[in-house]
Length: 273
Image 1 (cartoon, one colour):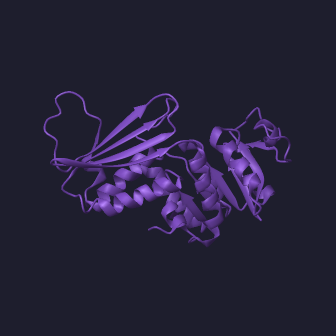
Image 2: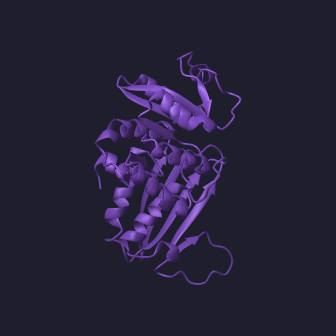
Image 3: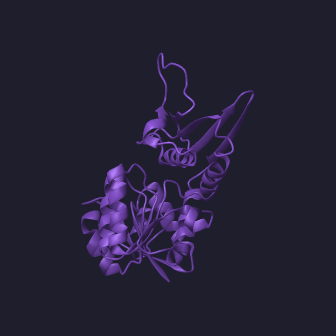
């Protein structure tokens, strides 16, 4: 039985992940963590998320290390915000708890440090900008198609709900990095984030990134490969958050087979490197 702890437990993603974990015969929810000094502390997470008592009380993130140790958690799942997730990764790595992280918005420095934490703790970790199985097939398609369409202009468009705080999305940034790497272009030099005013002629090297925010859009990502007289569009649309939760369950079922001390992604989980 895989013992799982979840941060952001009362949030939209956290509660959905908990409900799905409780449906699995080979998994056990052992800890539910919320923001530091949360007013929900000591309440039963099942009652808070509307499924009735399950015997797991909410704890604040200020007690994360203690909670993970007392619960004997083997894996921590985090879908919170970058500053909170960064601290959770640091703590979990230091005490040997494996990680599945779908939080986005880490800085370059944080990303480098996270790799050091995972290596130092010799833990197994899946950290992905998007846990959707379909999106990760989308990334694989971009990797395979981009070298073939290297002479085409490439633009990335992402759309999300009006509550999303970071832009472009982590998924769009991953798509951008995949494309730039396949084209052997430096991501720090070729990204163009939206356009305004007299921007001049488009260069062949640049890759455009554009963010749309509105309503309740769960997540849509399109890459345009635009040539002379033709264009190819690769699009992934998430209809609900269940697609991300399905990816988390796949990652939980796979994590023990992954390499220790290395940050893995969903391509490792799906075996589509």
